[in-house]
Image 1 (cartoon, one colour):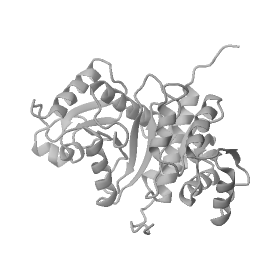
Image 2: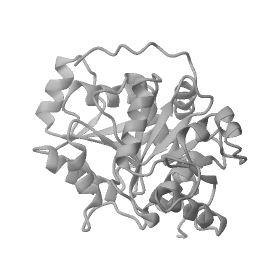
Image 3: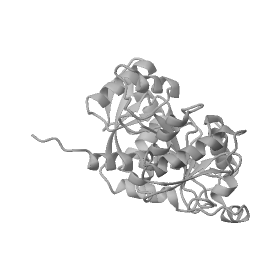
Length: 320
């Protein structure tokens, strides 16, 4: 693995998230197949910071060997033995059903393996909401934390799926401590509605859906080209007047390819960190990769922890 050459960032957005997560109770977290240094260290670091309380699920011998080889203290963690990654994914979902955990955290298995267990029609963690991914991005040159969705799960989402993708991101923003009523930019190549670019028509429809209460909790505008969404001067030159243009907090991309390229451009050109979280399932899911910095991995846990704590506080009580 090549060394991370990105410059260290000054204390800012992620540091505030991590500090906030340390101030709430650690969340019981099922860590799925943490069998390499990166994934196991991410769980250990977040546990030592008081953000999560891990249950490690996977081949016990391999997990202990990894911990010993890299001097990671897992003596206080529960380990649920599972023979291989597929079994670890299914056992982890069972633990969520048994109310043993309030978050899932991806280890060293493939994302597809984990998502198959989560989205299984029988025994999975589906809800009536479309499952979607959000990158929580700390862009040094941008004042606000940027949420980019969906850049990892839904390849070509239709209008109904985009409604859920937007609502998932708004709910995360409102409940994880970023603020209230986020400004949501629905991105396309241009800022005018044209039949030649279907994403502009969908953007206009989604804004009308928000007007009619089908999407709530945020302020939507679109279609907006990327420059008009994040740069006030670009929006001014184009004559766009809205609460969102030039200062968006959530960027909704037309499809996965566009979102993935946008997130990676921000990471490699703008030197942004990107924390990943999956929403719309019964519990939030922390998705990290080997390319993530330790700070980004902990920020992913922090965001999911804050969201899980907020969901717990708003959960309906059941009368005895």
